[in-house]
Each structure stands twice: as C-alpha cells, then as structure tokens.
Image 1 (spheres, rainbow, N blue to C red):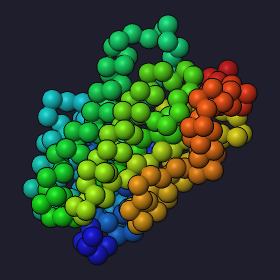
Image 2 (image 1 turned 60 degrees about the vertical axis):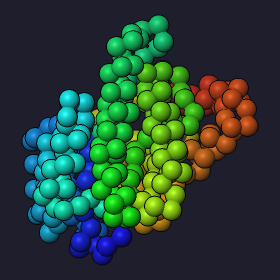
Image 3 (image 1 turned 30 degrees about the vertical axis):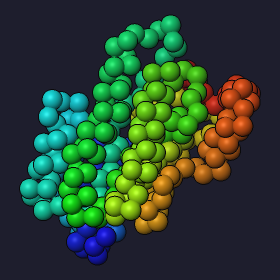
Length: 262
C-alpha cells in the first residue's frame, strides 16, 4: 500500500457506530477518508469533526439498498480521487425477534442491507483494486456469523452469509495483492442494541474499541479480527467442537441478553 498521506479509504455506514469510529480512527492515522451514509446531516457532521482535527474527509451520499447506490458511490469515489486503497463496509441493521414473530419480509430486508449492502460495493471496487494489484477490503460482520444466538434469527443468517462470502473471497484473491479482512465483533455498545442488557461475560464493547481492532487488522492484513478476542474465540471454538455444547453455553451464561425494563 501507499504511504499514509496518500491512502484513500471508503467507509460505508459512517454515520454512527463502528463505521463512524473507524472513519475517525483512519483519519487520525493520516488516511483520506470518504464517508458514505444515508443520513446527510450525520455525514456532514462527521466530515466536519475530521476536518476540525486536521484530517481529510470527502462525503458521498450512499444508500446501500437503493437501485444503484453502492455502485454509484464507488464510481464517484474513484472519479474524484483516482482510486480506492481501502474499502470498509459496515452498514447494517439489527433485528431482534423470535422465529414465530418473523415474516419473510424481515429476512429479505435484513439481507438487503447486511449482506447485499456489503457485497455490492465490494464487487464494484474489486476490478479497480485487481487492476492495480493493491488494496484491502474489510467487512464488519459479527461473531453471530460464526455462532448464532437466540432472538437473533433474522440477523444471524445475514452475518453467516457475509462471513462465508468473505471467507471465499479471501481465498479467491490470494496472490493478487488485494487483502481481505473480516471483522467479527461481539456485542457493541451502539444505538442498535442500546436497550439490550447483557451478562458481564459478554459485556458490550465500545465502537472505538472495535475501530482500534479494525486498524490492527488493516495494518497486519489479517484474515479475521475477533473482538473481544478471548470470549469470542472461546465461543467459536466450543461451538466448533460441539454445536450442542455451544448452545448450552449460550443458555447457561445468558449470552442472548434481555431487553431493558426501564
């Protein structure tokens, strides 16, 4: 990759949560950051903060579920800045329901943003990176993409799909100069789960903590980034040994959490 002052990163879902924190962290490290999010006010506010701190930020409207939103966003970034060195896809939505409360529409809507909303910009930027034999693609998935939790039946399939896509993409791009990194956070303290109480063993982590882990993964060109590492790794390993043992751990520890009563 090129030197810090010359590096260009596109971040989707940059209006809040992990996307916002990652964009700010990248800017602090000298990246030129292209912010993409549906909410104009949030995009502009973040760009203002980054510029106020001495960083460089560009703003591009980006609805990852619209007819041509992801493709147009990547095209505009390349047209404006000449290339994209790093793409971080973090736009997503969380739905918490029991199976008997769901409809097919719930799954379709979640897949549209959580899966296709990541895959579409990746597919658009890929030819540019392959032509230059340089770049990195980072997708924010979830530890739910390795082991699902109860109540998350709508959310989990989208993250399994994204994790699987990135797993194969990483292998397909071996030797091309383009790195592929999947970020697998546990419970993150964002507005999406602000009213969810969780046990200490799976305490919520901050978006900033995830962003720091993302940057480590970018520097190391890691295949996967688990955060928090040990608790997430333990659940993944236990579930790999025995699915039922993983189920038991979730029940006993109450990892699914519960809605706040206040």
